[in-house]
Image (cartoon, rainbow, N blue to C red; front, side):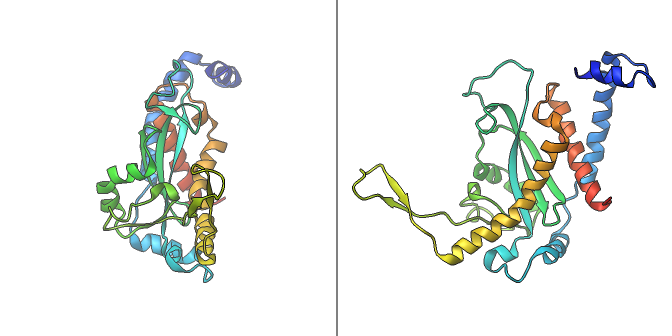
Length: 248
């Protein structure tokens, strides 16, 4: 398996040992990481707005109609290392395994505009953006981020960019079921429409991560060192943006 299998497959036209192949791959990845970083450009508000106008329809109104960027996080699994406790900062409850979290920012054309990480999967998204405030306000001035409910209360912290999040259902105590039992109350139709439109737009942000998992399978079962894992993620981001610019 792994490099042994790859070495056997290419032996008819390139006779190289698995060990040499592994060492060469590490060198190539370091070079391709820089290539990938070069393909991920922040752009500016004018660039984001042009993509927003191409995608946004008249049926989308209110705060969602102003969304020009999307933000989300994802955990990537690391395998082949010693087992870690669920109390470890590198334990991912999403993966139920050791992992590392990255935040991805893209415009409405699905072009990746920012990638940040890795950091502990236990860092809450709302806490992450507060820590990354200086970077976000410097490089994404004028951005209106479409986000999920993990990014609540961010507007009180940011001045140069905004976050549009879904409305949550209110809850009340259920009669006759004890004080611990709660039931969700329906939200108004305009809030339902807001949530529906935002969910549709956010599917564009989740698409790049879904693309990584399908076409870069090593990201979900990576067993080499963490630096090489970072290289593959930047390579995947660069290839994703290159495909958008050069559609087949």
